[in-house]
Each structure stands twice: as structure tokens, then as C-alpha cells.
Length: 126
Image (cartoon, rainbow, N blue to C red; front, side, top):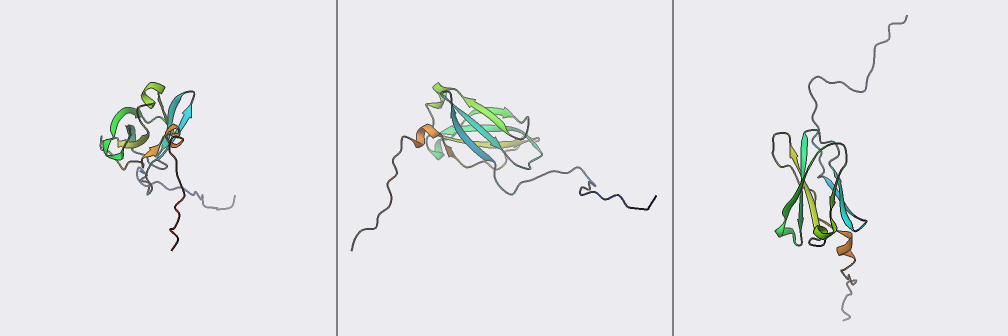
């Protein structure tokens, strides 16, 4: 047998932990009258749970749920009655030591986007 060294693209000398450079991703979706939040933090390895916050203005956020991390992508269903109260959502990962990590940005629920009218900015004629 030829003497060929074993080559691997992975080498672990100690327990590896991932700390993503980007914040968590959150996507609110309207499903069957409820708002469903899908979120993940790609590459984070030390996350135990996520704190789900809701608001109508970014300054008035309040915790509405806590979701244990169970996989790559998490899902939280906000019932229709509760979803009607809020337009903005964000998630904050909680690490295994109980410390809050960097939050996702505030994301607007689809039903609230439809209620807003955006007009193009027009320059005044001189």
C-alpha cells in the first residue's frame, strides 16, 4: 500500500464555537390569519434560546415570547388576536450563559406594510 497521508478539510484542536459577523435574520410571514416569525443566526453555536420582541415603534419593544433553540431555523407563531396589536418584530439570541447577544433588526409584519402608502420623492421644479 502506498504511504498516502490522510487529508481532511476539518481540523479540531479544541471545541469550536461560531460567532457570526452578521446579526440574526428574521422574516415575518402572514399564514392563515396569524403572523409567523422565521429566524436564525447562521453559524452561531452557543445559542440556547431566542427572545421574541414586538412593538409599534422601535422604542417601545416588549418581550412577547421566548423560544428554545432546536435547530438551524426557528419558528414562532403569533396568534391573530396578538398579531393585530403589533407591526414590528425582532429577535434577540440568548447564549448558554444567559447573556443577550446582538438583536436582529426590526422587521415589519406584512399586514402593516399593506396599510402604508409610499409616494415617490419628487424634486421641486425650480
